[in-house]
Length: 194
Image 1 (cartoon, rainbow, N blue to C red):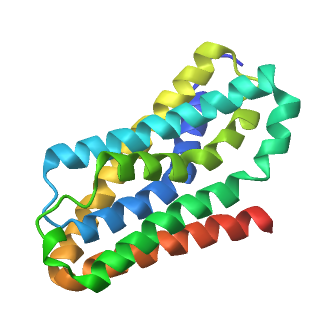
Image 2: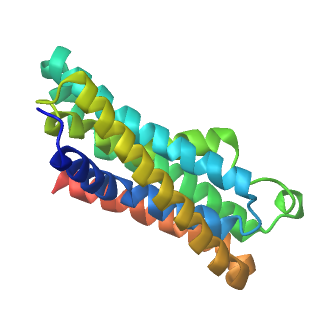
């Protein structure tokens, strides 16, 4: 594949498609954490962007080196994403329902939760490695960087949208955010099965 405008335009479109789950989770995070500072927004968007870039590169590597083994794993990707997002969503629901004073001042978006969300929302991007398998390594890296940039912008925007509505919903925001994460997990599972 040669360098062209189509390489970057196609990568941007891939980024838009891949980042929709991360964008939705970002809205849920903004809803659940309406007081999230800018540094945390950038960290969250950065984690999502990192994983959205890493997974297609891993997929590309698998196509070039481990194609037979990856094909077996591919059918489990939706189930893994469903389990991870479902687990986080159920925990958010439980926390929101309890309204425990101990959790009132705590940061609900810990590093571990953010890491699991990043992996769960990007695991389906492994299959993009098949889409970009004809790229040489430099083009695959460029594609991954464009995907990361698009993801970062969408996720930062998603948090801001969620924060705006999170302030209005206040005590119901965490329950709503948990329901969104569970819904995204179910959607990924159903898409993978169907």
